[in-house]
Image (cartoon, rainbow, N blue to C red; front, side, top):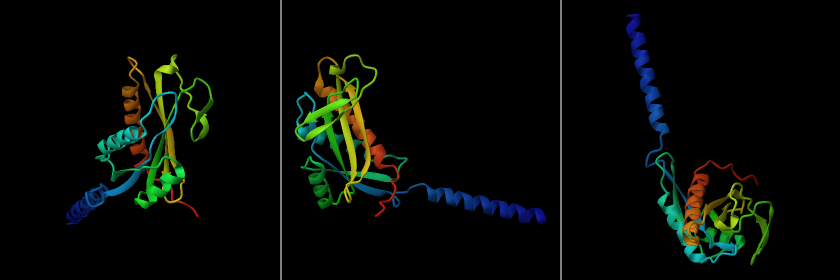
Length: 194
């Protein structure tokens, strides 16, 4: 009789553990949506840039990766008309975005240096391993919390220019940027401490 009780308890334990595992996986009801605004691209490079086209390219690329089967977060991407941090932050809040992304096309350097543009001076990204930097496209990105303008993540995506095709290289760098931005937004971020 004792072995029957142990069998029942074992079966009950396995059933409870299975139910707990099933509940821990995200379902359609447990998925949450994050609204992210994409600002117009700034240009600190010597390359021609169409700000709204490049912003729209990032919006399209993020919409392609908005769902991830392994993540409970769905990205809702919103284009913004502003480019500066303050103006984009205000527009993102107005459009109920939790985060917004600033992008800047820059000229890569072999050693640390500065890059000047219409909105001021910033450090230029250092690219290691390519002997011909003039054949690289670099896009810096900055993800900010719309509520308090706190930096969530930043980085640089680069792509080689092949056959003098800057547009294809910029598209590749933007696709890499979209994957990195989506990955960062799906991470758990620490709460803001007031």
